[in-house]
Amino acid sequence: MNKKTEKKIQKAFKKKSWNEIKIADSWQIFKVMSEFVEGFEKMAKIGPCVSIFGSARTPADKEYYILAEEIAYQLTQKGYGVITGGGPGIMEAGNKGAQRGNGKSVGLNIELPFEQSANPYIDADKLIDFDYFFVRKVMFIKYAQGFVVMPGGVGTLDELFEALTLIQTQKIGRFPIVLVGSDFWSGLIDWIKKVMLEREKNISPEDLDLFAVVDTAEDAVAHIDDFYSKYLLKPNF
Image 1: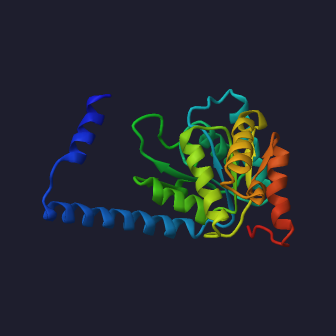
Image 2: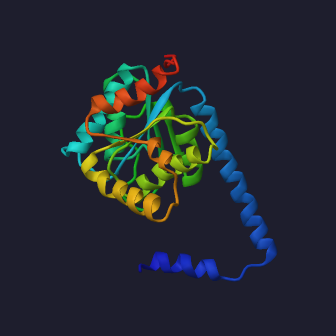
């Protein structure tokens, strides 16, 4: 454990007066509100978009980076913009593909202790910086017409299960979720089926229909486009 982490733990247990707590919390509320306001103002103007998630650590010469770029490019050719977390790796690939396709390229960046800085393929007027993960996740979900989930780490799983939870509990309307890379996702899906569903009965069989697993850019884009074609809906830009 490094010294910075130790200081954070010590600070959490430090006794504070009610006045200190009240002042700190009040200022935090204003900061959270300001992030929501900025996000809503900018994102309300972007039109139909698809959020692409995945690891910040994926190098540009790797299969999933190349695949994410191609998915983003093909999405723009169908009229969708692309939203990413604004950082390197898969996020960079998504913005790069959107820019190549002359589509809208949105980056919801967040400052992290390592690996995260805004990539150069985001439209200048569509880069938003966040301090709070939960505010950022609201923007991902509220303003996306679909999710493309590439291989990633804990943050990618967080974003995936946030979306699945909100759809499953009917807090938001259903939209298409595509997991790309059957080799990467198969172990998790097997566990969900065998343990969560069959053994523990913690989910319903129909919950497995909330997402699709594909291996190609064409299948990923087709799943999203077919979902909206069913309802005679089309992107409006």
